[in-house]
Length: 213
Length: 404
Image (cartoon, rainbow over all chains, first blue to last red; front, side, top):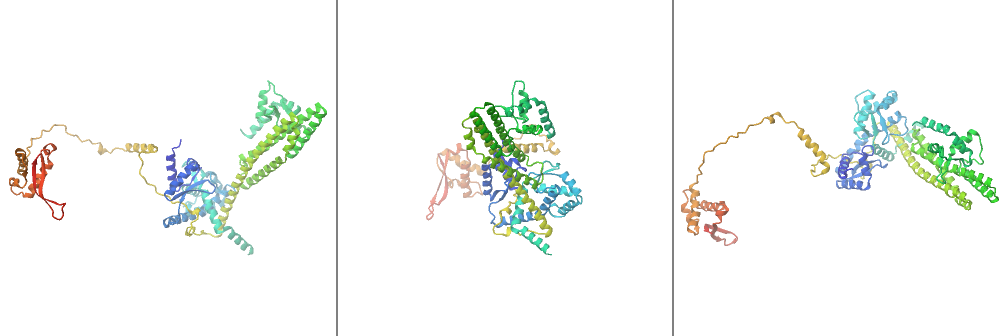
């Protein structure tokens, strides 16, 4: 039997530490928050300290947000958060694209998907285009690696993704990785930017210009 | 068990129980004759879905797929083949029921039994077919269109399954249930088939398919979402390829920061432990264990010997000063004479160098320092006067030691 007060404390601490709670990252915590009463308790507690509980649109992940964003101090924090998110966007998107190509899938990584490091590496190593893509991702930024070997670069990428909560590893030596619910949050960010910056419209214009030339 | 092994098992069962199967195939209504000797064989056939046990009237009949297999292999033709299409199968049932009633009215018992048997087989086959179709849809759903890994393939299969379900449901809606009731109302055996067996199978199939539609739509929503996400990834990647260094605008500059960018900053948590919290008992125990496990440094192990010898201390004489003796004498005299002694009057006893103020304070201090039993014998009072203006102020001029 789960000690409810202990679980409550544990979950609140996780949320305040900016953890994303999904069924793959922490099933007991996710199930706890699926209960309406417990979820409200957590949300009420967070609201007392100016935070609130949020859920991604696909209902797969819970995370903590500010209850009010009007104060200057909060806006400064959010600005920093935004910069971190945006700076990580390009490497993450390129990584998703790389995985889609390597696994020959027409769907991107979704929460619960499994990545096998060995399989991925064997495909990348025999495909020059993927080797180049991996090198590009690890040249600078989020996945920056000094190594020129694809194996090390891949390890670096997977390690960073684990540290940032996008991938889960059952043990430090395991070569199996599970995609976490944080990807759902990333897709919400991409969708928002895509809608507000009309990326598809600008691409269509570019294509038309190219056709005109 | 692999598909290969499972398939071989079914084929072996067909061979092992060939006599029972063929006897049922040739009998009216494809019913397996249950005897005391073939119970296990029939149970085996039911388990492998080669035959089905009907709830009412509790008989075992060959499965429609087994019958079709034999029909095709033997190239036999039955009176009326049930078409996979539900509408046509129902037409056949109506036709057979009509013929059954006609021959029954004219009293052709042999033909009546033949029509009844065919009708039972057709109804059973249709029920079977409906169950199989529902099961097939659910098999696809449960396996998540398993063999197909590509999203587009899964979406196509999902759409196909949805169309299939809708087609079957449409066919079921075309069944004239009132007509079925009317046709069977005057005959007990027809009622069993058309009032109970067939409507029950239709209802079950409809229920299965309604659930299947819900699941298929849900899956389709998820597949569409994945497809949209794949497009997003490709569009962003292409955008960065075309415009290297592209950065979206800073949405935190907006008056209302979009909710999607409202992400709480990690908070450093620090707190003191609640030592009365039973849930933390294990943590505390671990902490305590850790504390005890700390190695004791070598220096602390050096013991210091303490002497146990009894030391005889020299007797010490307490010297009482002349000033204290003079103060005490005032209290002794007060007791001896049993009369009040003025502090100022007794000042003459004070040793040299002590002024009147110190003398008076020393008298008060002696009184206050007495133990309770001694103090009980005296009381202090003060002579003086109240201030003319600040009447709460009393200016003491002398201390009086009074016997009690």
